[in-house]
Length: 567
Ligand code: TEU
Image 1 (cartoon, protein in one colour):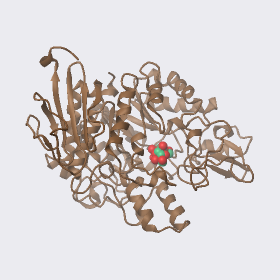
Image 2 (cartoon, rainbow, N blue to C red):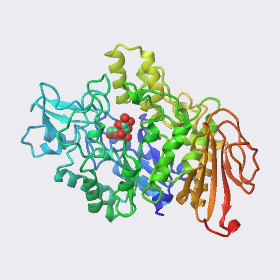
Image 3 (cartoon, rainbow, N blue to C red):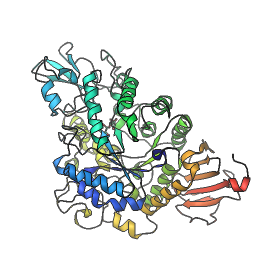
Image 4 (tube, rainbow, N blue to C red):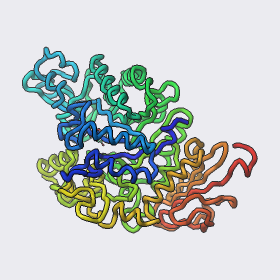
């Protein structure tokens, strides 16, 4: 097993983590000031979302300078201090690599748009229009056409995200060399890896064929024409050979729409260009796929389906590749609101979800604030939102489409990206201890009750449970390396699985939902089972045969010493 297979990663969204200078925005010195908080939690790696100079359109994912630090975050010296602070504590740093697109204010694009003869022209993807409109019907992730007319030349450029995020032309060897150079820049400064933004969108289908409409919208997302495209593996293998193979680093590719077989190729221990992927199958469980905008809809998810999806990934990659484990990030709602119960069972369900994350095979990712059980923000006024994706939805549906604002706000309450982007609640004081100024986005309304100071003072908090789970994971090879077997795949609320390794076997029991579950006739807990951790019962205790609402338990049921034979 490699260090990154044994690691737990903590994701920092820098503008919302900690503000050290009172401008209302998180910054690097703020993060450095909180490293002991992370060290106590026990995480091994920090993934830092983009801190580079940017165009201000997509929370830093529209980069104008790949080798710099945005002024609101500090300086390169501040960044080096952060890196040193992590390394001194035995932690590592993973940076965000956003190279499917740049900002339209990146010098490459400013040059490219000067004219069809510009030496930088082919850094981007330009096409003539068709019948007085865009070259194809591809839609952007953030709404509208994925093609933007450049009036100066009469050509369109492709942007899979906002118009201010033009896609790079990966077919150009010059572009690829530029990317490899900037990767070496950070690697040579001593970072420990990259999280690669939308990395399986690099290779687009030749000719940009139209996609089937599938909905009322004029510009559907043409995923089949840009996810896992024909040259993707060639590019990633080249990147690995030219750059990554020279460093002991981890890489995690953000890869929507991959299946376990494709992920196994990407992360094969011998030949895979990446360490692991972020797959999205479990992110689709609560979508109404039949609707016009599935991504913005919410239907109750089914526990058997959750088990089927996670199980397919557990068995599909076992021994063949490596997966990440996550239930939230800066793009999706808070996990306790989405998969748990952020009302009466907020603490219990946050702990249950963590138990799931930390006992499956893969590298777990903790998104900032989830270790406190922070729920969705659910702002009641559209003025409180900042995310381009959310504001575009509101404009298209309410301002232009005439729909009831209440309906659209309900969608945003469930699925808006700003739910997870509110400032870290450090304490109950002004600015939640995040800032002495005015935060760039309002605080989560729950901060007076749900904050780090309160969690640290409460031995039963979600935070300490996370710390215990991280320790547990470290001490049990069955969690990192063991086989996974789902014991009751079709049960409606019980998620019960074994993790089996040569030296031991663990049994995990998770009661999804607010109902008490009598295990009699459902599943027998072996007589020798020893409780390692639980969100109701304490280690060593003999708990009852009944699971409380959102109860989670992890047992060890066999060790080599007991059976004498490795299994
Ligand atoms: O996200 C891209 C991505 O694939 C998903 O987040 C998806 O596009 C989105 O949820 C809509 O379906 C990455 C970053 O994580 C995100 O913050 C950026 O906005 C985006 O890329 C563009 O860089």
